[in-house]
Image (cartoon, rainbow, N blue to C red):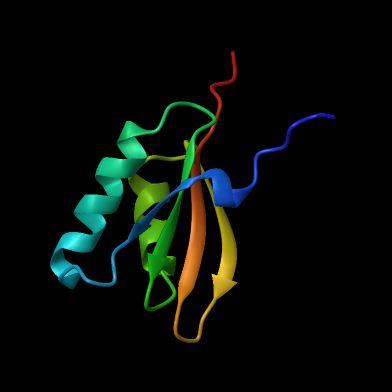
Length: 86
């Protein structure tokens, strides 16, 4: 039986307990640590769409973004490092 990677297999980072000023820095650290094909699940208390735009501006076409849960109390997004295309 072929194996598939599910979001549940990805590590999770819950930033709800962090001060808002520290959240993006922490998330960018995690994005930069990802190996190509790796991912983690971001857990937040609001739609992190501004983070998406910041990532796209600073790391263009380097990551994937998949909503797993869309609030209203909890937002979960799987963020992955894209494979490099030769």
